Length: 196
Image 1 (cartoon, one colour):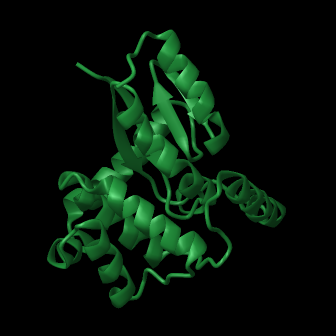
Image 2 (cartoon, rainbow, N blue to C red):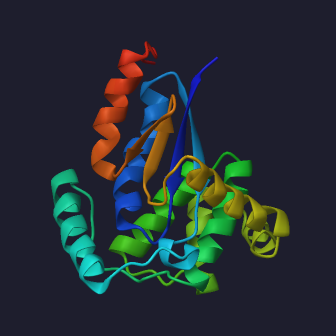
């Protein structure tokens, strides 16, 4: 049986966007099951984000994107309806085994392609690109069960003693930030988790 890594993600977090390819790839490189756990943006969970920090995050994220060779900068802030739509559709994508594809396509569109995910045409294109039928996406938007799961993810993150994303949890230890994936990899090796 594979070990488990929980991956807490927000569509509004540029660092989540930068972490997602490497976080999902952990399941390809190690005998681990990466469990995607989407959460609402911090500001909608009552965690304040000062303006100076918002500015710094964008500058730093752009620098990190360059280092990682990822596109960044043509962004459309999904705060509010956009983030919620993505969260609920991603929960349905997870049920279909397509969360990796949807998260990667949608977060790239938000943070590098200026995509307005409140627009049905945009979200439909991203869903179809990720292999999520549009009819499933539309159903997900009104599915109270999926909405509840997003809230359960936030509760789980809080119960682990954290608030921010991206956070990865393994073996009772938390790894917060896209720059901590390398530390998680070391923890997986130290725990004897085999490579694939």
